[in-house]
Image (cartoon, rainbow, N blue to C red; front, top):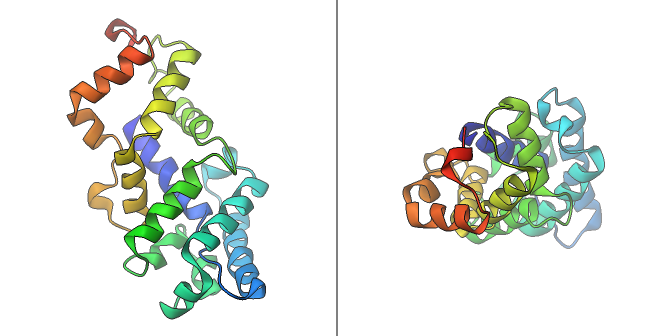
Length: 195
């Protein structure tokens, strides 16, 4: 389950990979178009969970979050987003922590799609038994609370920056048993229900 969430997070980031808004709407459109060409040519499973219109919404949001001027200053062109399985890799080391956090917010804030739903669908598809005997309400509650955690969003930002050393969004939560127990308690999850 942990590995699948990381895959989805990176996949969402890749879809949003368009990068920036600046003074020119034409320049912004070039980055968005490039990201959408990447999405259209993608053969990954992400398309099963995020539609083209949702991907375009994410792309525009990320372009605004980073800024066209910042992309140009870093020497990142629309062509950089058009190729490769994860266009965000070209941002590694080129955007600030604040910009990465804003990109993570675009991916998770729900303005383009329900991030919790996408994570649940991805997890169910990859491992149908991963939720044990949890009800749909409990699963939804668990992921809503987990994905609202600052450390999880920071892990997403790290993955966007290309820093995979801290990209496991569950690591800090699973090591903080008190926080995990709080989430289980809030969602009325019993250990006997877990697979």
